[in-house]
Image (cartoon, rainbow, N blue to C red; front, side):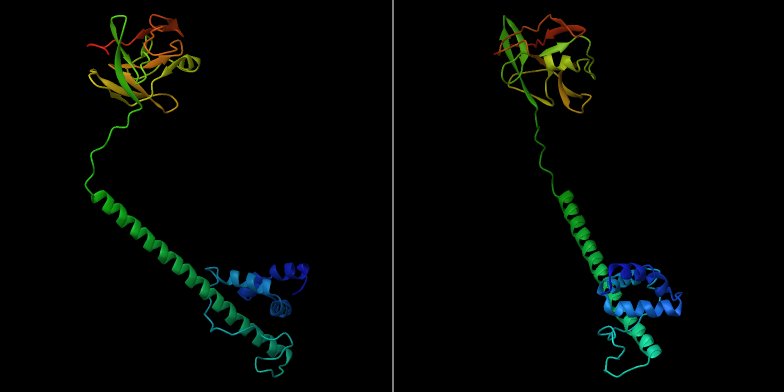
Length: 253
């Protein structure tokens, strides 16, 4: 193989060589180089596979490139012009064979992709046709009740009192940032514990998480309560509004 400088010079002429627009002297130099350089032959094969170049008439496959000493495949000597022409013809057949193999490989890959897509589509169709099992509710928080000082309050499953915030609406929480660190939103969706009644729901917070609601009030716990059964946040004015414990009808545990 020639040096990298020679390869760079030859590769810059491969395009015009393939189109036939190359000067005769340059064509002879390209052919002589291609006979001895595997890398440049591979580069030429890649260019020959381009759609615009594949419109050229196909050639039959050749077993190998012509010998570098100017002899034919049968070992007989040829003159310079005849040797170059024969070398070009043999090289063209070799490149055409390589291009056809690449096209066949791409076709097989495309066919495999179509089969996989059809199988995947069939699988989805069967999945959609199957009877769907009843959906199970995935609850972020189980709501329960607890009697604290003669009042039935709403709590989470651990017994911590839940609160609502005066500035909130049924669809939006007014407690963000540092407020939400002190008054932590109750994760939604929520599910009822035994014997609890009311309307539960959920709203989306700015970050995309869900916050549980009860009777139209977004729910919170407070860091002021250090244990179950406490109501230290009730009646507190904090972060621009008043906080209230959530009371529910019925008898708490």
